[in-house]
Image (tube, rainbow, N blue to C red; front, side):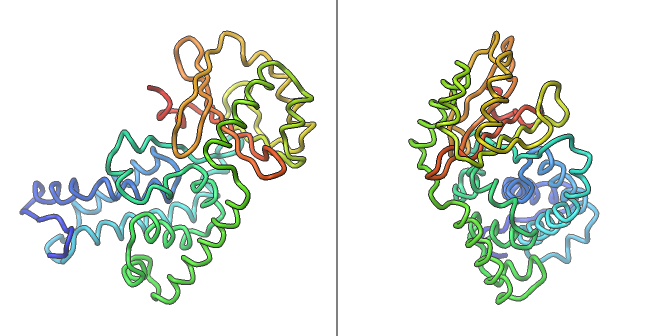
Length: 295
């Protein structure tokens, strides 16, 4: 039995014991690949169904086998994501999760759970993302990754190198956590007071406002681009702040403003910036994306 492999028993109880032992890692792989906790849960359930039906006695290393299934299903899901997201109403953003609520998620390399990394991983091809996740989040060896995704170790090194380069390029000139928190505070003060001049001062010229609402009422269904246009939009939605309580929370490596109405979470927003100013205003309004903010 390989190091870290769960001990197997017989029958369905044994299959369940093996699966339960590795399930947190399977979810960790699927979540980082898909950027959605609900989609990751569905995928892990599919792995379980396949594991039940498989000739388990032929599997020498169950943990590695199940991780391979999870990764390949994730790659397939990403390859079909474009078609699936055509039915999604408006822009799509990754769903943050609370790693502290699940010690298995936080036990691996935490950087791959940061929201900034999830956003940047959207730029990667499915195979690049798989190689990056397995290497950077779970420290798989290159030859192990090659076996999982069905390529050579040399090709995996190239995939990981390209992925790291894309991620690094996207991180250039980004503020640290204290800087991001201060920018969010300044943005919130200007947005709630309707100070258009201050908003434009805070923004980079090419700032993008992205709202993930999946068709929710009164949520912008297109990206808004440009300092003047985004500032004007934010001043126009002054109704948003009526009867709303705003709280700050730290989640997935950044500070969020959580908006509650009638005791329920209505939305969560965060900002990011370059040296030129805030270049991203990100809103999560789709109810299925707000689970981590509910407590």
